[in-house]
Image (cartoon, rainbow, N blue to C red):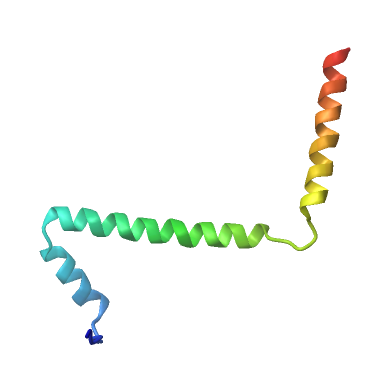
Length: 76
């Protein structure tokens, strides 16, 4: 059985703890924080592009139109 432990700790206290970590653990922590940042940015980016106005059919139609235009352009 696991018990969750919750501790109030300030940013400065966390920073002091991180400074005490071995270099390898600091690198691992840095990578995890970077990954979390990238995921947050990606979610925001995807959310900004999401729309209910664009269906797969609409995308398919546009792709076919562009393909046809490109094909017509290469025939001449």
